Picture 1 (cartoon, rainbow, N blue to C red):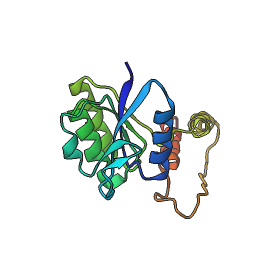
Picture 2: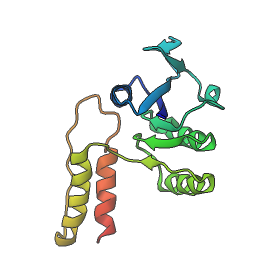
Picture 3: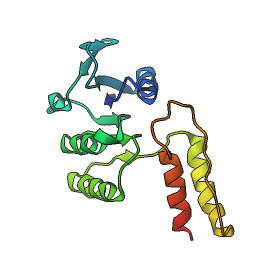
Picture 4: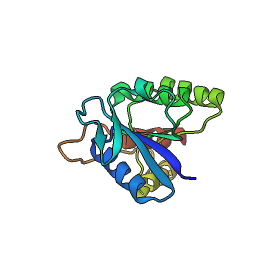
Length: 168
């Protein structure tokens, strides 16, 4: 039985990459996509929803979110409320929101993942930076992005700084 996936924010760069990954994996089944501004009712034969409320009672296992900080928290709560395990790549959560989502996830007995970056290199960079921070009294995080980057500093930079601060 394949894992049924909903992707919110499917029109963006990361949403499109997630769609292609799910479509290419025989163990995954893309059952719906969500975008409030999409006018088409289908995308590659997959139903398009404009409002997450229309997904209440929908048969899915995983909710992948690559939306915006303005809606990611509510989307993640919605996913948990509807028994969709959230996999969230959207950044901008406050520490209080993360704490609330962790607690709600436990209440729902449903796992999930919120990650600032899904690239292996970025994950390793964050871990290496945290280890190195023990040995350096001062650090500076400098990042360079394309001109379309929506968040600055990036969620990756913020998480790197948090991990480094934890070891000091």
